[in-house]
View 1 (cartoon, rainbow, N blue to C red):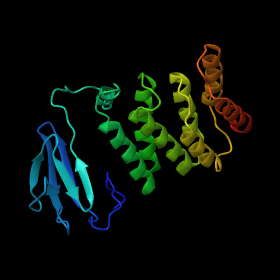
View 2 (cartoon, helix red, strand yellow):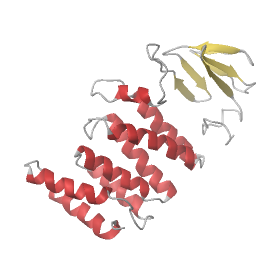
View 3 (cartoon, one colour):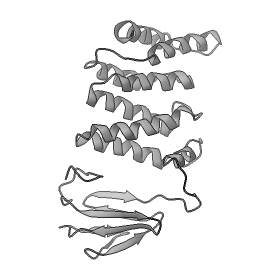
View 4 (cartoon, helix red, strand yellow):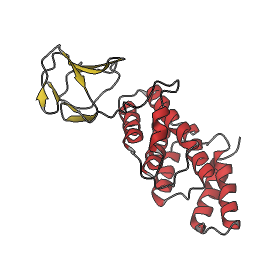
Amino acid sequence: MSDCWLVCDDDLISRYHARLHVSEAGLHVEDLDSSNGTFLNGERLTKRTKVQVHHKDTLRVGREVISIISDASLTPVDDPMDSLRKTMGPNEETAFPQLISQLVEKSLKVGKIKEAERYALALTNQLMGAKVPEDHPTARSCVNCLIALATKSSSGIWLDRVFRLHAVHGWLMSDDVIKSLRSALNQITRIPGTGLGDYERRLRELSRDGQPVPKGLMSTIAEFSDAYGGP
């Protein structure tokens, strides 16, 4: 049902299939009399019975498999997204931001734009302050989320964030990102904010500093600036 916190597009999942209980005592899962059952590590749960779930456990509802990721060494913090900072190193775990990306996609699929915006904003804010290359899985997930959100909402605000991320980190946009941007811009008349202009200036700076910047990229960003930039 659309009022569930996590909605899965799967005809084997009941309208109200299972409930996750999160408390100081840990994480528990409860099957809500679902037709096809809830499975923990392959074992079907007894209906209406709460069972504790641990790190690296897997839950299956319908065709969906949910991986449980936790870190018992973490202490409570004010920022609920603080654990995302752990994913930013080049050799560190990247599953969490990819899960956030999936949450954005699922929220968009069922029309929960506000939820998708909340997830995307949290992921973007964390990535702004992290030093990662453009081909890092976290970076790719975030950029894809923002472009998908812009396309679904027809709002150029999220494309502004795409350009801001690239400007802050000096990323060179890939052909795939350019292609996705062009598709999104088919239904967006303007990109508000300074991100597009900032990125255009950053590319010129990189070129002056001796970093190879493809001419095609420079001309494409100039084209976007002329057509969609401005106050």
